[in-house]
Image 1 (cartoon, one colour):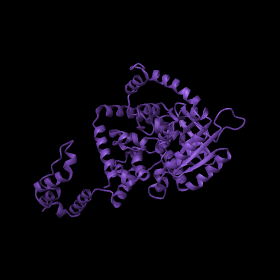
Image 2 (cartoon, helix red, strand yellow; image 1 turned 30 degrees about the vertical axis):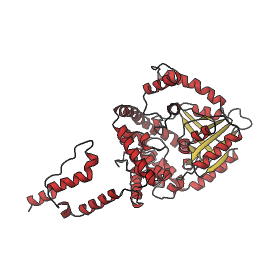
Image 3 (cartoon, helix red, strand yellow; image 1 turned 45 degrees about the horizontal axis):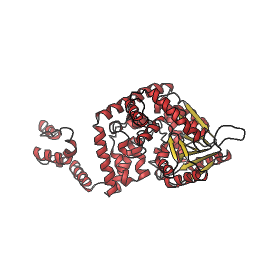
Image 4 (cartoon, one colour; image 1 turned 120 degrees about the horizontal axis):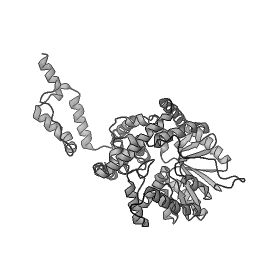
Length: 462
């Protein structure tokens, strides 16, 4: 195990241990996720046949992934015809370099951003701020996270780990608001702060929920209206989207928008839904003069070329698998040390960031299958986690003592006689050596029976 691999795994384990036994953190997370789960149950009632809707969505996304080159070319051609510009970014470094060049070319001093996990993936905020450009997150949750100096905690809800009291205390410390300020007072304060940023920004940056191939359009969905403000006021709009965001047709939104809303937040439809097809025309008064779409690879083709794993690219980032996962619900989002956390993050992060460094995340699962059952596009997440584990072992990214222990267990378990070897005390000692160090820190290790069921059966039926 190399240094970085061991360091990341050790930090993950220590952070997981700390957050898992933080009662306040657990209580806030349980409450917030519980509210989401209640809303999702209600939201799914809009589908008369939810399983059929999932099968259709899964089919469309997987079909698109398998023919991704075709749909990417179709999207590019149609988007350019409408006056947009496409940048193909092989990795994060390429993407931020192109965006920085656009900002420098237009002498930009201020940027506003709507919520986007892809921008977090490439670290665009740090690069722009390093160049002296002010960057403001305009989603309320992202804005609070930015003020806190934290990364988003959840794919959909960036500050799921915070209570309203936590947020009020932050605004009291930073802006001298009353520490007992209500969410309404804080929201009104933020709205006034952001209005000036919207009107003064030279560039608006957003992600994309879907890229529509047959019209060359970008579909954005949000609940606050900050996304619309981010691409309406600035003269330049930059969309950063992973290449997997494609869907074939505009008509497919009639399925994907309600699916995303119901599984993500429990709504029938998200409040604001926008379809953008390039910069403003000559006869239009609103919108940017320039619009770019940065199509980001960033090792997604590494997943694509793996026939068994590529289905993971069907993900629509609804967050349902995070909300249902017993591991995520215990340790929270920051412990993963990646942009994409929870089950889907544990599947794709090792491929996006390196199996050697992040493969340990694939073992952070009970393999209960709840994530697979919750997924609206039928990604077999627990099976993909098993495939990752297999790749970790076959690539030699596991500790030597763990491999030795597995060999000993395999040797013993393959034959009944070996399992019956030794007396009760010897078997108890072996069990303590193999499992006791981790198990006994939090609970009592069960003692093995003096006689196995196999021996008892033989005694009673001889």
